[in-house]
Amino acid sequence: MPDSSAPSSVITVRVVYLARLRDAFASDGESLAVRGDAPTVGAAIAALRARGGAWADELAPGRAVRYAVNHEVAPAEASLRNGDELALLPPVTGG
Image 1: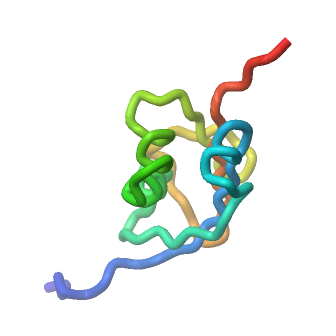
Image 2: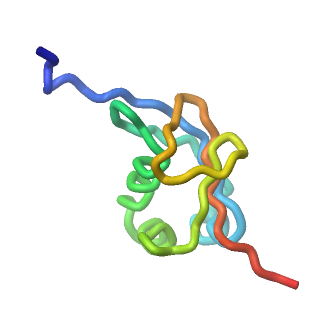
């Protein structure tokens, strides 16, 4: 029987913030520890959103933000592995 008190695994991903998110978070990226037995993009976003403030506002459910894992567009359900790059891509406008 597995020990339910055992800590879940932790991976580290490189998060890259683009366009308006770079301005909102005053950063172009960071290393982020993501916890869980099967870490996903959604888990990483939830960890960022839990910081509150601009994080909660910019990454709120329904906000237009796409994700890319290792330069490939990915859904929130996509798995993450240690060392992956997760880019957060808001829509870009301009002319």
